[in-house]
Length: 173
Image (cartoon, rainbow, N blue to C red; front, side):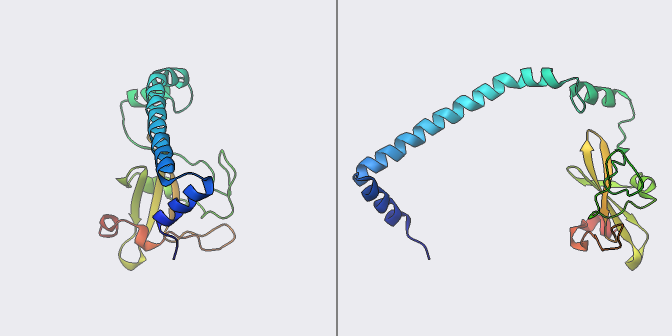
């Protein structure tokens, strides 16, 4: 296979023209310096975190928007069509390799269940003919349809989500 670590280390020491001890000391010193740099970066990041939050608070998906959404009192997840799966319109252009948005995506979203961070699923139909829709979160409490086990592009090509990606608790519903 490959060379052993010791072999590579010896070659490195010889190539540089230094003894193994000198090479070892140099690597050790670089490690300490690197650790110091990392600690410094973490401290700077923590100090700047509050300033960054304040600066971006009024922008979309910033703290002010999050607070407004939380204050609406519903706390319910909201469905949105960003257009990527919709050849008939939306704020963004349809992407031809994506499955086409089904007509009932918004209605089915109301029945969807969150199964993990940023993922929701719903089972449409029963038995072996059931279809599973997946939804992704793309903003605070805002979700969009992101495919199904029977997805097809606008040109008719399959664009399906494999059944092994559907959580077992959703398949058993």
